[in-house]
Amino acid sequence: MAITFEQALGVHPDALNFRVQRTKVLASNLANVDTPGYLAKDLSFTTVMGEMSSGSVKKAPPKMQIAAQYSIPYQNSKDGNTVELGVEQAKFTQNNMDFQTSLTFLNMKFNGLAKVIEGR
Image 1: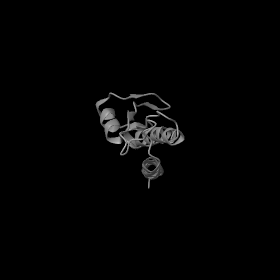
Image 2: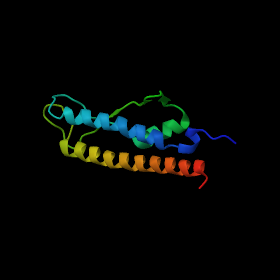
Image 3: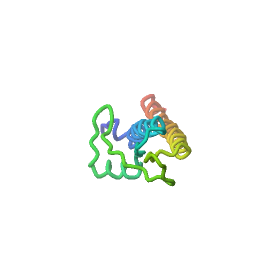
Image 4: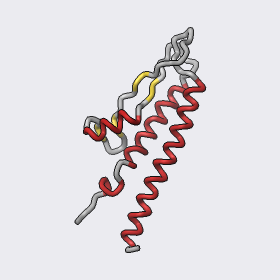
């Protein structure tokens, strides 16, 4: 019985790809912390993975097509910018740790496949 990489690796490549895309969105927020009127955006892991299981997210080979949602600030600013530096830095750090976790799981899958191929 043949097995494909999608079956063998499961959701881990998509989770890793999501983390890369979220890093770009959060980095954009951090870069625009002083831009008047800039609206902070974010991606929801739960929403994206739910949409992927239902098939409503389009998976192009280099990346998934995910729609970002606007973040609601804890405290409004005078210039209309919704980026809160501390909050965005915390999200960026958490996303980095989640990226490392996803990468570890993917590495474990590859190591398991290598052992199966070698017959161990």
